[in-house]
Length: 152
Image (cartoon, rainbow, N blue to C red; front, side, top):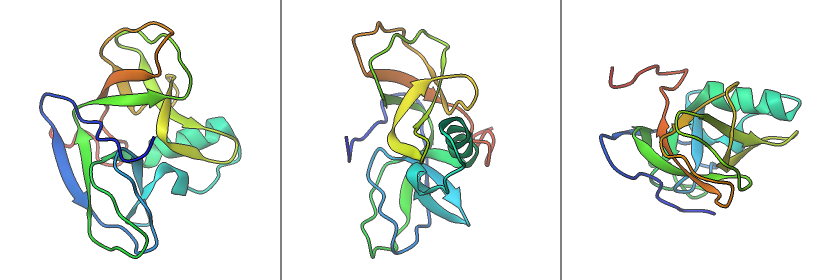
């Protein structure tokens, strides 16, 4: 689901970040820094398998895109680095409060706007328990591995 504003409530930290002219980023994309430029997680080089792709995505993850960039545009994209967001799960599954979530990845790449429960490569933590009938989860973004605790 593209161009979905994911921020919900509480303190938020927004930072403008540079984008290459050929990079397409949609609102709501999980984004990362690669070679000093912002890319959607799918723009990270294939690490070989799903687990390695999730880890590569989490290692470079900086936040959620709150503005978009079309092919040919070079304006900075506004990135939410801290705060409460509503994320889309790849499949409906129960997630409990305090459970970590990771980017969803296939053997080829991470997806830009989906997550799964998992503690190996977390980017956020669930803040509201839900059952297995929903694909949306309310989460608090975790500090990125690149920038650490940005507000800290």
